[in-house]
Length: 214
Length: 214
DNA sequence: TATGTTTTGTGAAAGTTGTAACGATTGGCT
DNA sequence: AGCCAATCGTTACAACTTTCACAAAACATA
Ligand SMILES: NC(=O)c1ccc[n+]([C@@H]2O[C@H](COP(=O)([O-])OP(=O)(O)OC[C@H]3O[C@@H](n4cnc5c(N)ncnc54)[C@H](O)[C@@H]3O)[C@@H](O)[C@H]2O)c1
Ligand SMILES: NC(=O)c1ccc[n+]([C@@H]2O[C@H](COP(=O)([O-])OP(=O)(O)OC[C@H]3O[C@@H](n4cnc5c(N)ncnc54)[C@H](O)[C@@H]3O)[C@@H](O)[C@H]2O)c1
Image (tube, rainbow over all chains, first blue to last red; front, side, top):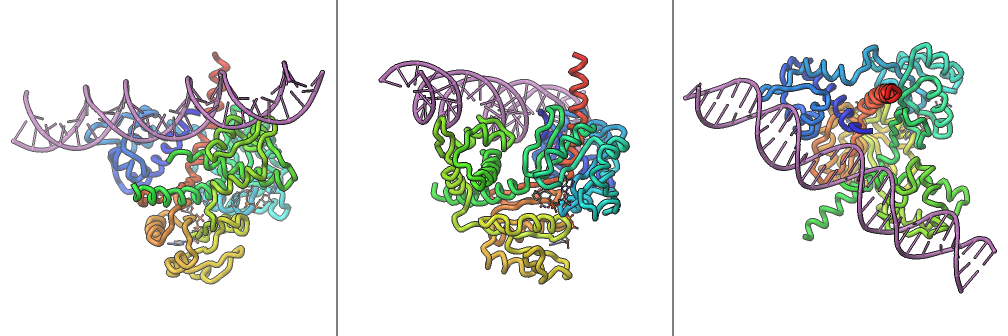
């Protein structure tokens, strides 16, 4: 999947530009945006190249017009609706954060097997029992799903999601999901991430120690 | 930072192997491990090459010995201790999941500015007020930190962490952290991830539609 | 208008990651 | 023992990503 990193950063640029435009900024240079995004100016320019928006030398980018281009590139015109699967500790944290934040990409339904949760509204989102999955997915035209259920339930659930029109999955369960190749899956394995940090924090300490020797 | 992906997958292999060894499996082939990890057999062999463990043709890998090699490669001998910064919705989810799970990499202290939380024990982890940060970091020899505070507080906090011996940060705040180059930072930007899924779920649908035309 | 400075867009180089190909080794089988 | 099929480690290659380098464009200034 080409351009994956670039698309990720484009969404970041958009967020940063929204802050800027709210602050009344009209023009921004690549290096200014880069500083806010924590990347290099060249990378910003190269990323923006992908969406075909041309800045002006010396003046930089017109923030409003650039935002419009980003919106055109990144967003589905009618918006996209998201379902949350698994309203446990992680699922609730995600709900609390994402609900009401992005109009064009909003969580419109949650699902959980726990009968205690069925019918309740959590952080403003209706929680359904799992047997309503098919109906709700179709009725709300949901194409994106967040999987935050225990690993043992994830694959079976993914199958049902894909069968009912879901095209992309953000997966927090620490197992790989087998899905057709046209379905996009982003795995977030927090255990892996934490262990990676632990490894490279050690590594970094080592490297600097080694460098001192040379 | 070379080998970043590989190190991530090595931690995954370890988890999978631990499950296998618990089930009594003594030997495993690269393609078996690959299937469980959701990667190719070549990649498994390639990754394991890095740690210098030699399997045997026809018999595969000795699970116990391989685990020992992985442990040797991935773990700090005395273990590593982790601090959690920010015990909000996300922080609590992380605590509930990570507490007591990995002996060699355990969250030993949490911090939050909310006075309601100070002194409480949440999911078995003591929550400290922020002015105890320096003392606790040093007393417990903490080298890894998880940042789950609001974005505005993240940079200042990161500075304090680095000044007190933290070498790696798992950052959930949606801003880049400026830290010395020898400090390892892994950013987890959930908004970016979700938007990426939304984009490529759309893209995938497009591509297949286009392919049908050709 | 000419000149200088800043910034952009982009081709080319470098670096990183994933995939394919293949000789070498092992264990099973006759 | 000799052969075969399976598996491993490794080198070579391909794809993707980031960085470097620089011409062209825009504005300021004289
Ligand atoms: N919390 C974390 O920080 C963390 C870290 C790493 C990985 N994960 C992974 O994320 C997932 C969720 O973690 P969590 O901490 O929220 O777990 P949790 O146990 O708190 O929540 C899981 C929820 O899923 C529901 N559930 C179970 N089976 C279901 C099904 N078939 N369909 C729908 N809902 C179902 C449960 O009722 C529960 O509410 C797990 O796979 C976990 O391994 C979480
Ligand atoms: N919850 C999510 O799903 C989600 C998604 C994307 C990003 N994030 C990011 O993760 C971070 C935490 O999110 P959350 O949902 O848990 O927010 P939250 O508001 O629920 O929790 C933040 C916690 O940090 C504490 N805090 C504030 N300032 C602090 C400081 N200086 N030092 C220590 N603690 C401090 C607050 O008291 C609170 O308990 C935020 O930066 C947020 O942008 C969260």
